[in-house]
Image 1 (cartoon, helix red, strand yellow):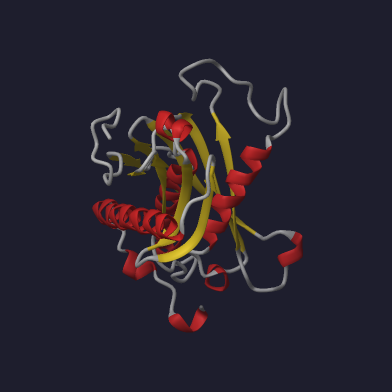
Image 2 (cartoon, helix red, strand yellow):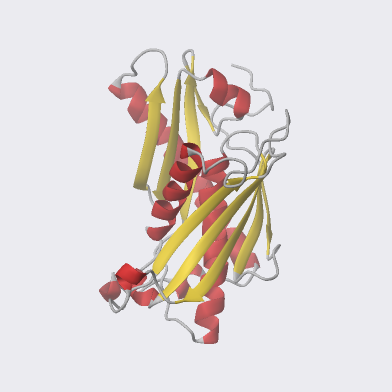
Length: 254
């Protein structure tokens, strides 16, 4: 089927990333996937939540927020002001936190907390997957700063990225934009580490159940897109002088 933006069915959206966009954060990136734009920052604080004190381990958490005009249709009220945090917002920020904790050796991090903030500036589908992928870039930039200063030993595992895949009629499409996501018979988000190491799969069949073959095909398509994204992450970070191999946690601390 023809796609709105002219991509092939198996092509991810074009990626643009501006590292260091937010000068105050230890790590930051302005991340664009097509027309979805997310500002991701990684902030590092000494100390951990009360339930972790004395365990010699660090913590990573995430917050996610839609800018009031992230939608092209109208301004939406900010969560947490005139309305409480929506269930969607809470679910997405928990996903981001789970996904990026998989990239971190918390023992090697030590008793400090990294907070990943993902602020969606413009939304055209895939805001949670863009937040995970851009969030890893911000995390790696923060890790580079910590290790370079001698404040922490290397604590990253492998790059983590996420992408959506959907079924519309009989076609499988990678990296859905909003109108594709809206019309999909099956919509799935996949999070994985480099090397096809799956962290999480979120999928729903809207109209009719999917077959096992369709499920496998969707996961395989998503993993091919994630491989492209993790290569992009390595390349972009290398351009900033960040060698992920030098940030990799020692095996004995895993």
